[in-house]
Length: 425
Image 1: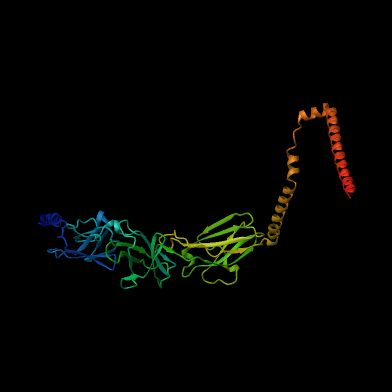
Image 2: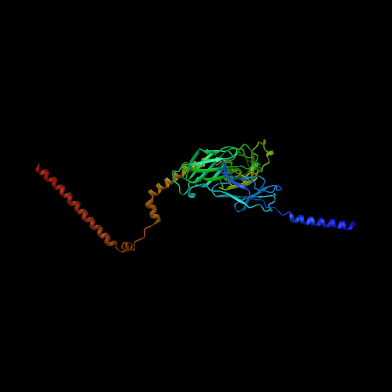
């Protein structure tokens, strides 16, 4: 009797296992309800929804959502999702419900809600809107007017970030050539490179509301331009040039890359060195103050005048980009300076020499011309001199006789007049 009982129990267990597999299919939940969208601050878009109606009580609801083209997929239990995004284009979010946090599960029918771009002619919106965070102290935004705008349009820039609490207006608007610029103070108390990522939201529009607003998101981990560093001193040691400088505050050496440029006055050569960190041993020098940097540059001639400049940029260890170099630091020189007395003497002597040469040329121009271009002998004159000596002498004596005759006649006339005067007396 025990064997048939065991067989019956095993058969019942198999039936129950097989029946259970068919009775527990993945259950698809109904869609979410009351999906709505709103905008906070300038560019913070928020979607909210309610749980689906008629959801299974045994289901722990999770919500699957993504933006257009299935970008930024997310599965979370919250009935809310937000995103900082420029509102220059249409943005749509699709949301569905499911019973697990597994992306492979089929969510419910997705419900979509979109937010439209601002009203107005797209050609009237400003173009090339860019913002740069200068030395972690102020932000400078520039833009170009739109195509379909009046030249006398008055623009207004609004900005917001989490530490402000409310939207603020930029007051310092001015023109730089064709660009329009606005600067506002933006500082952070956090100097640790691992600070949480934050964004600055920017919107530009006109006062009259005739142009389409333009939006921009500026991550605080990018578009950072440091101030130029400061060169403290230069010196030669073991045949190499050492450059000691100081970082711009509040940056640390780990967050900066450096470029040193050396110009030699005698050879007119330029040497440029780009490094990611200080390469000198600070223990060789007095003290080790915070922010001090040092670089060793080989192959620099120490017996000539060398001009040194330096600049920095942020690196990808601390920031998202590394493209914005600072301006060059003030120049510092080292080496032997050329004696200016020689140049002064040359400046005085050269004009005197040139003036003397001009005078000599003017005085002896005819003689110089004869020396350079001697006259060409006349063959006819040479022939006449060879065979015409007799005729020339005869002509000479004839001219002499005529002259003597005229002289005698004039003398006789004078003597006659004097005799007549005496007779009359």
